[in-house]
Amino acid sequence: MANEGAEAVGRIALGMSGGVDSAVSAALLQRAGYEVVGVTCRFRDNAATEQAVADAAAVCAQLGIPHVVAGCVETFEECVVEPFVASYAAGLTPSPCVGCNARCKISTLLAVADEQGCDRVATGHYARIARLSDTGRFGVLTALDARKDQSYMLSLLSQEQLARLVLPLGAMTKAEVRIIAADLGLAVAEKAESQDNCFIDGDYRPFLHAHGVQDEPGPIVDGAGAVLGRHEGLANYTVGQRKGIGVAGPEPYYVVEKRPATDELVVGFAQDALIDAVVVGAMNWQAFASLGEPYGAMVKLRYRSRPCACIIEPEDNQRVRIALRSPQPTTAPGQYAVLYDGDTVLGGGMIEEVVQA
Image 1: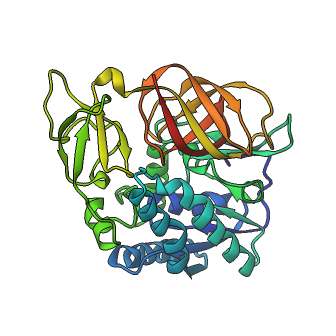
Image 2: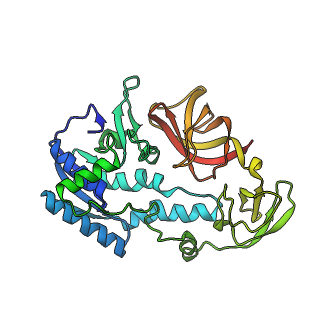
Image 3: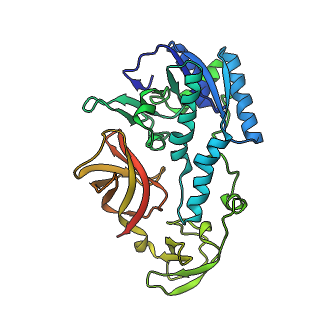
């Protein structure tokens, strides 16, 4: 199992999405001696959700474990969809999955676990949980398969959540998971990966329009304020974007800033799209309770980005400035900065400001 030092005893509630990862997690937990209860959270009322429920139920029946469906449409709307829409309306570029894990998925799973008399909960995330020897706190560690690592997505989990969480797949590769599923004859063995934004099918812009976010055209300007053209609404653009901006220059333009107050879309050339630092508000520390002095670490500025060296400079009220040791491609306010020391997540928080190089 991927939880270092965890004892495989008791009753456990496993989040089951109807995919291969959670299906194999159920089988591994059974092998480890747990009494498993499969839990599928109904986040949306749509065909995809019905298929997920049916697939999870079929796996549970095959493995001989109970299956519970938890209705949490209202919680998902409040904790994930509404903040997503509000963030775009405010000119941010949100990363909804990070917040969803802490505020919706794991919290709902824990509530169901309590109802079902389960001591612990589990998910099919590719990461590990460990009790850190130097602080005694629970920490998230990277998966052994770097290509599938999802530790970034778990950076907002609290100590209370981590203390009860088991991650069976943290030491496995996706190929190994597929092999186990095939060996067990699970119906979902070849099921495709789920999409990142589970509540949006394809282009996110019609979804925003349906939720009241208006596309107000405005000026495209350079760093000096010179007007270069017109944009179709700030929600249609992402900081760091290069293609589809609609203005030509001697070299490609990049989106470097969105200014909702003036409806300006600021663009620049490649050198203008580099940053020296980011400012993060309300850091969620996992490896330690707080940070009182500068600390050298690595940081991921987006889920798929490479970690880069940085100095964490604490400010007031869990707010930090993360100074990058070398200029990096810009990221967008609304994304999450997740800090690492080796394979251990130190903590994470939403980026409020980027500092141009």
